[in-house]
Image 1 (cartoon, rainbow, N blue to C red):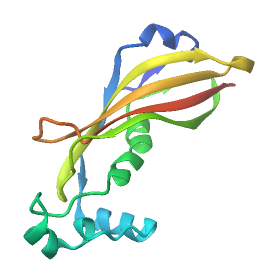
Image 2 (tube, helix red, strand yellow; image 1 turned 135 degrees about the vertical axis):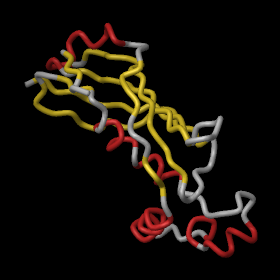
Image 3 (cartoon, one colour; image 1 turned 180 degrees about the vertical axis):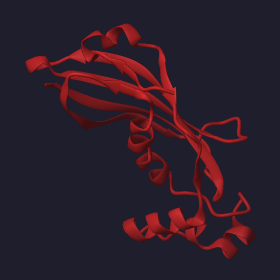
Image 4 (cartoon, rainbow, N blue to C red; image 1 turned 30 degrees about the horizontal axis):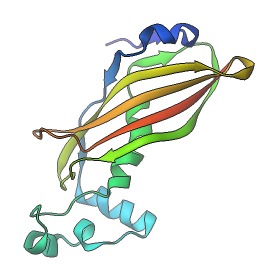
Length: 155
C-alpha cells in the first residue's frame, strides 16, 4: 500500500477519523527482559517465567505497562500516513493513559490511531492529539488507551 500524504494545515478536516492500524508485533519474553534490564524494573511478574506460571493470575509473565506505552511512537510512525511540509515533529507528551488489560508474554499487539484534535499554536506550529488504542490479538479488551500529543513545526 502506498503512503497516504496529507497537508497538516488542513489536518483538522481529519479529526475523528482513524489514521491507520499498525502491523501486529509480538511481545516476547526477550523484549520484556530487555525492557526490565533497561529500566531496572525486574518485578517477578515480568521476568520470572517459572514463578509467574505458578503464582500469577495470568499463568505467565506479562509485559510492563510502560513497555507497551513506549512502543506507541514507533508503532505510530510505522503507519502509512505522512504529513508534508514539516521541518520537525516533536513528541509533546501524553494526556490520558489507561492500562486496561495485561499483555502476556508471546502475545501480539497492534496500535489503532485516531486523530482527536489539531490546535494552531504560535509561529505556525500545530499541536496534534492522537488516540492510540493498543489491541491484543484475540482479546476483547485493549492493553491500553492513550492520548498522545505531537508538536508539528512548519518547514
